[in-house]
Length: 528
Image (cartoon, rainbow, N blue to C red; front, side):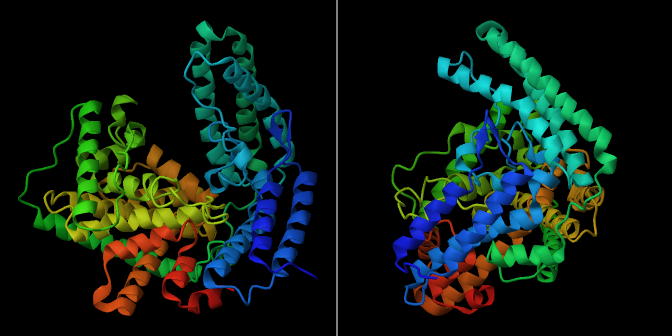
């Protein structure tokens, strides 16, 4: 096959691919019928063939990295069609509050990233009211299509979807009071949407027993997913060894910290949501000051503070938002918010999947985009998770020694969750097993099996293979990269330069950043 081997041909193909995977929307409802999906898969194979025909042997490393990014995204769509098949397997794929995409595919179709319903600020503009009416009218059609499409549904995924539908119904019912005064013309559509959602929930309950497919993807598929989409050079078995070791270390170090702090006063809990949010603001200010003064990373002058809506309110003192409820997030963050606020600031707000800090001036045609299929999460979550303990070791927590206990409790939480991730996807665990294993491994029984923290995270990990395990494995890959750079640079190695270089590579898999930063080709040869 003849092909244009210039870098511009890759950019053109990337843009064509991103447009191609957007589903056709008919009457406000995306088309995920069997015929539509079969047509998309056939088109994907042609795009992959064109990509393979591009000769990159004469390209520099940076351009070859971009090629690997495009290849990985196309592989993700292939895996979506061959294995995940959410439109046919996952009843929760047809969601109202998060749009029709689970978080795994939140950027699969940028045209649908705002499809989901939300609690609006009323009164709406004329255009806003019209848009909301279209979304409400689409709800019955969406669920009607779901009942036809779900020919391979997994029972455990249906269990998750039924729980989520209850929340969808609560959200829809909340619109009644909101629209009664300002938009009474929307009330009939709200009622129709509620009826359709209740009907879909009842349909799932009635048919769940017939849904016999396994929810996990299996070890072989898990390995393919990690190697060809996330570009991680480890297998399920290596993941398990690594993560089990980290869980054991988390408990050991927690007990050492507790012993060291045994004569210190107990944690001081906040008495109101306002006090809790203020504590988080003070923690955020301390973190930013530490980043600058200790030269951890270059912090641009005039960088805006963390906006109020970015503080982990639901992880703070949500007993004020949900009376009489105090789950894992509330228990940890109310005692000491340092770990969680650091995770949010460094991993999600300033240097996560948003163009706020290191991406602010990034106009590169491929690098500047958010990655598909959770690939950006594998990078940002690994960074956010790693920075918690790294900065603890650098001295950030020294003035608040008991905060180190919370850091290790979070480490136990995330490693326990990742172990459930692995065993649910190897189909050794059912959903119930995964929840039980996760809940029981967390210290102090703060994460009850029926609590929001456990269910939300188990839903995430069962519907998005590797999301939870990538926290730990990705962090270890970053630590390997630090060690390699320090060996290469010797006395010239600094953390600020390391993190500046890491961030400047853009949103790409860690293995590709390593290739670019070190010139080492061993991982990429193993991956391709």
